[in-house]
Length: 467
Image 1 (cartoon, rainbow, N blue to C red):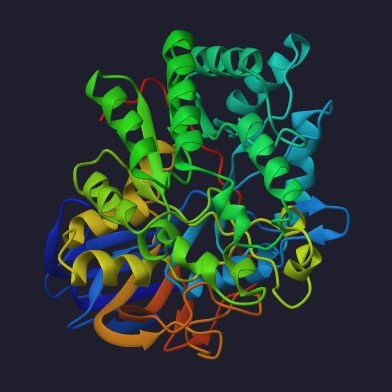
Image 2: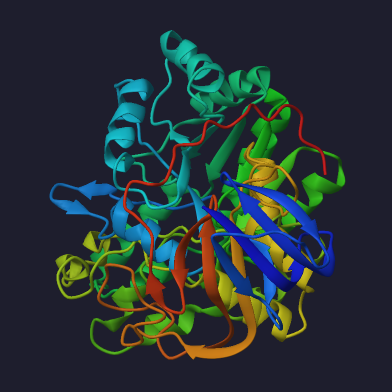
């Protein structure tokens, strides 16, 4: 398949110009004015942006969180929804069983994705324990398997929490390998004590999920993770950063020259803790970790995005259906499956709230939703930019079209979940045509892709990252 896009406004993290673009054999071949070539398919992008396909570096598809409870989107439905939203590459998280092999976890996730994923994908590795005897598995993952990032938790003591010795051990080996550690940074030990106190006092409703996870416990976890990474001489990436207090720890470390990076998510930019005041059990829709924060934190996060204290916007997409899965915690908020949908909404939300609102320019929009993640996670320049030789992952984006995000809007909701976290929000900016390696996936609201066409991406070791 060859594709010719004419008259588009091509926007990358650094460029902004009008040109034609020709792609064949899965990659971009020519960029120029008035190209004299023929193609199997041609698009007129007059009045449209042509941007790199989005890279979402934080999703959880087909993730088991408790016996019989699995996130509602699998690699087929989740990646199809991502494509409708303008994302053409995701990175998911194989999860090591405590006491088990990381290589076994990787094999399990390969089985989940192969033959189902509609777009290209990579893997981070969640580490739940790391005796010295398993350190060689990190070497093999980085050097042979194309998994160059490792996620660890200071949250969830009953399932995923690791102590500071394991943090240091993992960070030290990652630094030696040129890999990077990703941190879910909250003080889970203290949070669990706060939760027990709330339950003793009869506070069982879903709104108490947020009230038992104060911002100070996120900030402390971020500080501790950064401090250990500094001693271990490793790069560290803070996932789903949600509040000003945690951002301040990242800012201070970066200003000393430490290799610290962080992402935030649309939920922390557009939603706030007033959602936990919803009547009846409705607040369960927004039970996620970190929890939604007071609205004042949003201004600080946007400021951090403008000044590059925050490098990327991911989704942490981890959906559970409200009618059945979320209701498992109706009498105890700790039993509500933890996560929310968003893989399809990221690009339109950020364009509307960032570019249209005047908070960021269009180049920074591309950087935050595609380029920065591709660079940080070893995919650039194959992904994350528009250049000759790069994969033809392209979005023809209508910057003027308005749509309402709703579970009832068939143009805006393809996730396999029975509600939208952003129900009723109007956005300006719509991914009209989405192309992955030269294959048209979505056009004018119709699906043209193929399950299983997505490829696993081996990612390069990162080395000493500086920005």
